[in-house]
Image (cartoon, rainbow, N blue to C red; front, side, top):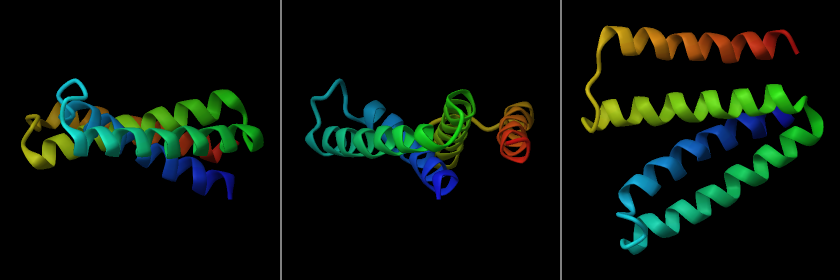
Length: 104
């Protein structure tokens, strides 16, 4: 259960990071509300996971998932250019997250 919550909270990290970028320094209400809701869920999930899993592993997995999904979403929406090297590096992050799960 802790791993599932950790993965979901990593997904929420991508949501709050994207909403933060779209909030225009907290001047747009919708993205600002999404930011705070996703931030709360993300941190709560991370805190729970850290109570069951090693702190370092939890944090690395959370950051890896959030960063990868944030960049992938930006590339899919056209906000950020996609490139083969960028995709390879993202695959490296995903592989590292999987490796952390397999070694726990």
